[in-house]
Image 1: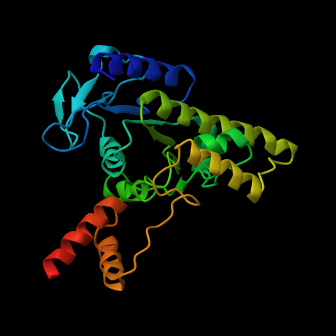
Image 2 (image 1 turned 180 degrees about the vertical axis):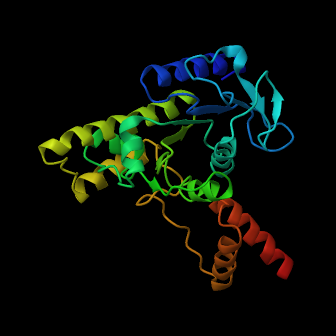
Image 3 (image 1 turned 180 degrees about the horizontal axis):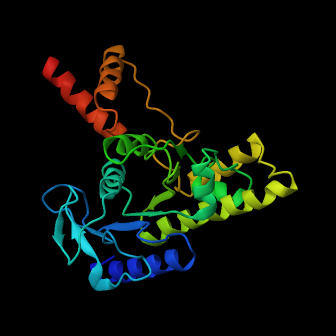
Length: 268
């Protein structure tokens, strides 16, 4: 996707989020990674500005930031939660877009610190998996970054207690649709409460649907019930990997494996 197209889509989805009542005041933010990677040399991330109603965002209001969230171009300032978007890009090389909104039904579950009773819709399992993680409320900054980082490689959606819904994907359309689906599920579950609540899918049904999700290559890298951990025959390698995981809790599996290889080479 070129920058001009990305700008048009970002304005479109910003307006839709506002139109559907998923954001108010200056709530919500969207970003798209324009560069192939998030390395310092060429990182370019398009995002919405801070202190701006999503209903008023125009193409020329958008800005571009670097790998640290510092503005490279644009008339306004980046939003304070840009560090959370950057964390997704660092931990998920397959992700090109991140969206965040305070969708009322899903945010209500999060604010009550109650998990959305998913899965009960078969199609939703294929689209977003069998779990919608509930991330505990954390103060802005490192605490919020640590809390969200813990689930980034395990899912494509998350509800943060007191901070709405987060979704990411290979493009802005996919990320937006995933966020939309979480709110749709939450709304149905909420309405079903007066009827005794939703009836969740059984284990065999979920297993079958998760197989379809994997076959369609929709699963997250370390999604529960999907990822097969690499077997490590050498106990020394296993020990090194375990130590590196404790030292670098936010590193991806691939990054840990590369560090383990480098460490073992130095010891030889």
